[in-house]
Amino acid sequence: MSRPSDNEARRIFVRTFGCQMNRYDSERLVEILGGQQFVAVEDYRKADLIFINTCSVRDKAEQKAFSYLGRLKTLKSNRPELVVAFGGCVAQQYGEELLVRWPHLDLVVGTHSISKVPAMLARYEVTGERQAWVDFSYDFGDEPDGRSQLWKPEVSAYVTIMRGCDNFCTYCIVPMVRGRERSRPSGEIIREVESLIECGVREVTLLGQNVNSYGQGVSGEVDFAGLLQRVAQVEGLLRIRFTTSHPKDLSSTLMRSFADLPQLCPHIHLPVQSGSDYILQRMNRGYTRDHYLRLVKELREMRQDVGVSSDMIVGFPGESEEDFRLSLRLLEEVRFDGLFSFKYSDRPQTAARLLDGKVEEEVKLERLQRLQALQEQITLEKNEAQVGQTTLVLVEGPSQIGGSQLSGRTPQNRVVNFKGSPHLVGEEIHILITIAHAHSLEGVVCLEENVNLKIAKEKSWCGR
Image 1: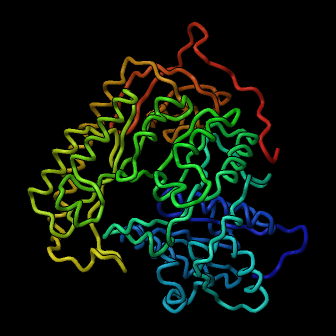
Image 2: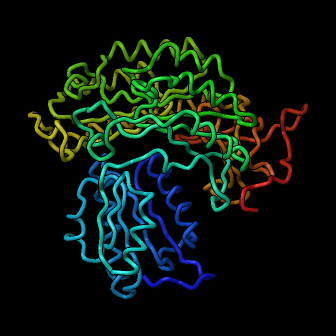
Image 3: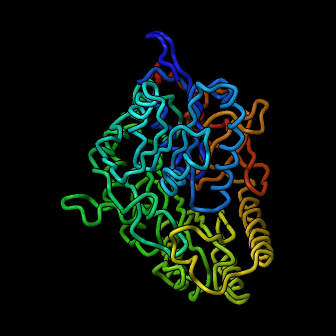
């Protein structure tokens, strides 16, 4: 890739696979390269740099990333000056091997190396050398305390509070590709939240592989409940969310935050993974079915309207039909607001790949379909119970269904679509729910009695 003239911008296209942490890293990359005369584009065919940010937690996500990389071969052949970069967990997992496997790939960027991309590009421009940077050398000093004027502001934003994981669940590759757990200094987190509010952000989501263990083992640092209290004190912040929570570290003090902090949305994503104690033990999850059910009960006692979503894996090695039925019964007992469910797949370097009792693929598929059908019914019933109710919605922007529809989320993280003026984006307004669907709600804006229907003043976004 040749260096442009001083006033010529280069174009970057980022394709992100996986979780919120990956999306956060993609945002950081675009911001970092903004200082190197890059601008983000939505058409990959117009890009000078294509960056694929990958996830290896599940085999399907990994294969999707490789499939996308494969489709770029012709484009790279037609445009040799194009730089193709592959980052994230899959890059960390395979390292230099990817350069051998994919001749049209130029840069491999590990999970700790986003800040190294400008140096890698500079070296590539001079020498043409294909490179892999996958050292575990992450420094929170590389994390921005705020967002520059190059960042495109949104109503909601992610803020990372920790990296890595120490839990070593037998099915999970995260500790191997993201390293051991490290908490980011709370002062840096608060400064980033403050800068986001100055840019017009109304809601932040605090990110970590296990936010419940934030601050553990760090002398003089607050725990996660203490961090939430500090974030809630940032003036102008309307809503706080967080993900992900590990049940074994969910304390009563943290649960009490849902009752004590008005800014904390009454929603928690609390992955259970299985309803069988035998399977939970094989997964090395560190809790039992009864312990999980007690946590949910305590949460709902702390905050009656709290929404609870979860993750569940079917077909884990050794899972019998009875083990699976225990998972179905747990769904019926808890009645999750939402569920992310997956078929188990072996991941490299994990302990579970060596376990006996592998479940046949057709059995895993049949169980997944039964599980998802039950959860679809539960979610629809819970959404139907919202019809006729009035709820607060933070307006995020145009709805995916198009037309003049806007979209936003309730405090419990339910998506609501409704007709409204674009000036409402960024406002928290009352919506009367009129229609329930399996994955969303429809409603109308309440107009009577000053119910917080405000036309947003002209916002002073960063960069404008």
